[in-house]
Image 1 (tube, rainbow, N blue to C red):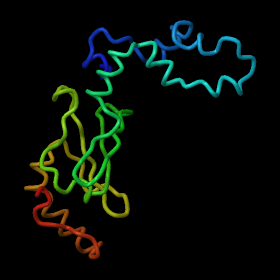
Image 2: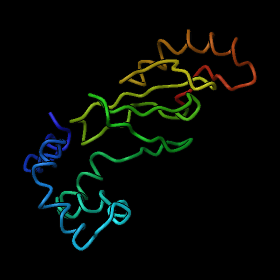
Image 3: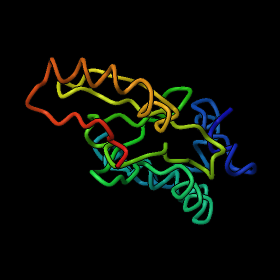
Image 4: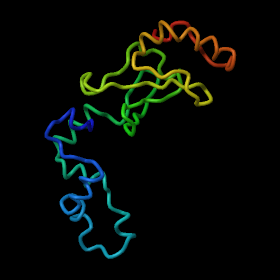
Length: 158
């Protein structure tokens, strides 16, 4: 199911097929009078879609499915391209965070990908608290050996 439909049941279908079928409604007004591809490239497609769905729906979607999450040690972008949204960042960005941030009041699960300093996955979890208190000890031991100059605290949730 499309995430927007979980949040706002009357949200329009934004699949590729539906957008192609409704192109006259949402995109054509922005292309009116253009005679070249150069002009069409300047169209802000996101603004056109936001206008088409309406201010209230777009604002609710921004609130419930944000583009990024703010944590104590930084901001992490959320990738919605897969079946489950994923926030990926180096592990130290998640230090000081004890629980997995919620999307849409808990209706949509978020996975966190904790990365090494080289950008490789250390762990992918939907339950940060359990990972910190369980699997983190093994990950920490491995990372301390590979990256001794980096901070690998025993209690990263604090």
